[in-house]
Image 1 (cartoon, rainbow, N blue to C red):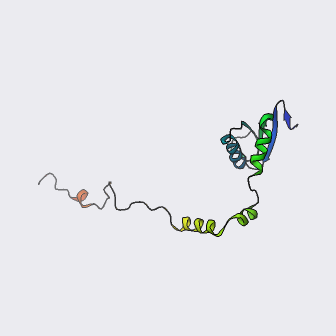
Image 2 (cartoon, one colour; image 1 turned 120 degrees about the vertical axis):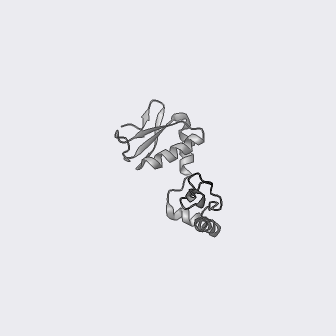
Image 3 (cartoon, rainbow, N blue to C red; image 1 turned 180 degrees about the vertical axis):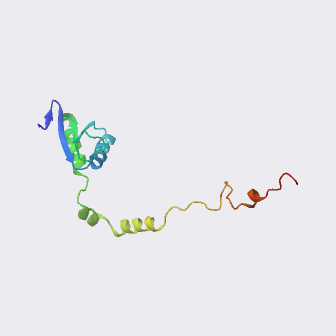
Length: 120
């Protein structure tokens, strides 16, 4: 298979569909037209995906993808202590709902169990 089809160029191949779709959306958000080619004809198969871009967008698309860190260890090295503190604070303080407001009566609600049979 060739890496060029008319004015489209093979930009990248990903082992998972999710990673390829995330990178394709990043490129689309930057105004680049992307075509996705799944590596399996079976829907739902996570067999990988190829990104294709037009020749006019090839250099810009490659530049954008080159800015994405792919090494987890390198990403951790770039994070500061403040980043780690922000992550741990967000994980230890989940969003709390307002438990004092409850518009729906519960089964144990006395107003539901008050059955006078219409004899007030």
